[in-house]
Amino acid sequence: MMLTNESQTLRNDWSRDEILGLFDLPFNDLLFQAQTVHRQNFNPNEVQLSTLLSIKTGACPEDCKYCPQSARYDTGLEKEKLMQIEQVIEAAKAAKASGSSRFCMGAAWRSPHDRDIPAIEAMIREVKGLGLETCMTLGMLSDTQADKLSDAGLDYYNHNLDTSKEFYGDIITTRTYQDRLDTLSNVRNSGMKVCSGGIVGMGEEQKDRAGLLMGLANLPKHPDSVPINMLVKVAGTPMETEEDLDPFEFLRTIAVARILMPKSYVRLSAGREEMNEQMQAMAFMAGANSIFYCDKLLTTPNPKANSDMQLLKRLGISPEKSSAEKDSQQQEADLHQAIAEQKTDHLFYRAS
Ligand code: SAM
Ligand code: DTB
Ligand code: SF4
Image (tube, rainbow, N blue to C red):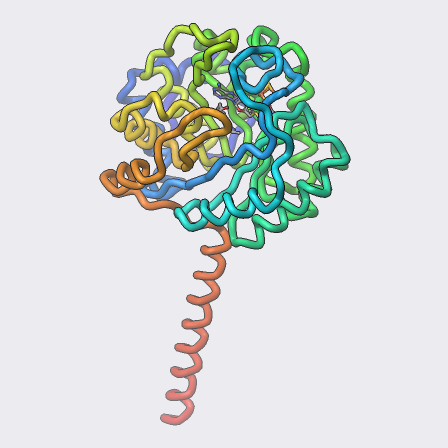
């Protein structure tokens, strides 16, 4: 199936066969198509930078087979209680100083307890007050919890579908795929932006990668941000000896995500520590335009900030400004324009 300009309207009715058809394209045709869609919707030489912080680590009651933070697996991880707000602010200031535009706070919870919400709200207000976009990932949210986080000013909520509906039960048994859809709907209804993606390389088949992307693209509205994680194989988890996914298949997943969700940010997410620079450059070519920019993801290593900056520079890619920065630049430009117009009006008035 060839995409033309006319078919560029956002679609929510993708069939799995159509998606598998994209996966089956010759690699160069797929990348060309994805890059074309990317250029029609984004500056291809800008990448959005998000910094992650684990605000509550380990001892999670859920059984997600990929996750080092589940209490069910012995991964040697030291559990930590909910972080003090001062530490969160310090980390957010450092993120801003290093050029990040969004600060994402993650907690190893099934869902937040209502008693934790006031502390969470305070974190959102403080981090937002620094001029950073805010994102949280705290597990399932009820509609009232989503409304509270939205009212506190949370910009994005991350909650992943993780994999296809069919493969989901092989990975997680303590919450259902429908639970995830319900949280995503609560987040969307609260007015927050949705960040939702998944993990590849968990032993799933191509039809499951297609199914994951179909689940995301056929949501009532496309997620604003789509993290594609390559499984980080952590010793002690049931997935520690999982076979490597073919890197080209990973790139195909990014490219297909870009084609299905043309206006969404596609994040080259976990797994970059194991990828070389050429692979990351190809992911940008395939339409990825966001990364986690921090030395650590939640609990596992990520490329160092300065090596990321060097890579972006070598590729001629600039970090995207935060919406607060874009707004203030726009205000400044409007002001200059207004002053210039006043000056011209004045000249015109005197001359006539
Ligand atoms: N506990 C919350 C939840 O699961 O909704 C939020 C944090 S959880 C760690 C966020 C996401 O991180 C998961 O949905 C999963 O997609 C991703 N993730 C966790 N462990 C991973 C791993 N080993 N490799 C790649 N992605 C991983
Ligand atoms: C997402 O999709 N990936 C991030 C973020 N959302 C929260 C988490 C990746 C975690 C990788 C394993 C770890 O560091 O614990
Ligand atoms: Fe818990 Fe989230 Fe890890 Fe699942 S992915 S075990 S819910 S921290």
